[in-house]
Amino acid sequence: MNTKKLALVALLVSIVSPVSQAQIKHIEMRVEGMT
Amino acid sequence: MKQHLGRQSGVQNVEVSLIDGKVEVTPKEDGQIDPAQLLKATYDSGVTAAEMDMTARGKIVKDSSGSPALQVAPNRSFALTPNDLSKGLEPLVDSQTMVTVRGQLYKKPPGKKKPDPSAPLKLLILEVQKKE
Image (cartoon, rainbow over all chains, first blue to last red; front, side):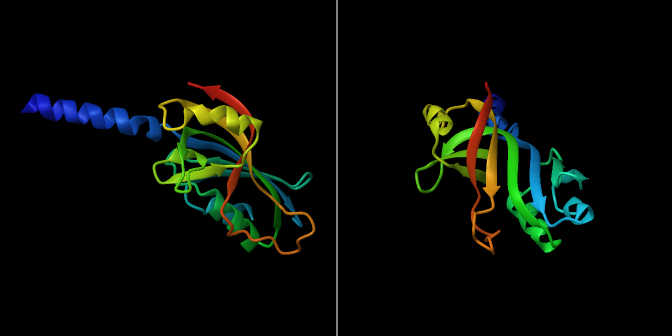
């Protein structure tokens, strides 16, 4: 039973982790009309 | 404007250069930053965004219309504007390969006096920095 749960957790981590490493690292804007 | 942008969710730091009109935004690592919201907040603070560039890491997926998109969070992706670089990434659709790219999310349309900041943002890839 525990082995099944561990396998399920490992599977979920392998699916989710690549997306969780995804991120916006930097944003740069050029603006007009700033005083 | 700096304070206004700094209050947006997912924003860690904002640096404004008055001389060249550059605004640099450093996101928090919580993945909550929303470029469209930043663009709207910029307009709300009374200045016009001429251009917005982004560096991001994510997976290439297909969006609901079947076009390739960069997924930067489980619930956030940006459709890719077709160019040579985006075509080079198409074989990676739905693979586990993570890519780091720099691209343009917004450019003020020439001639139009009132650009629509609520229009969906598309990513024009300018540089593929890493594939892993």
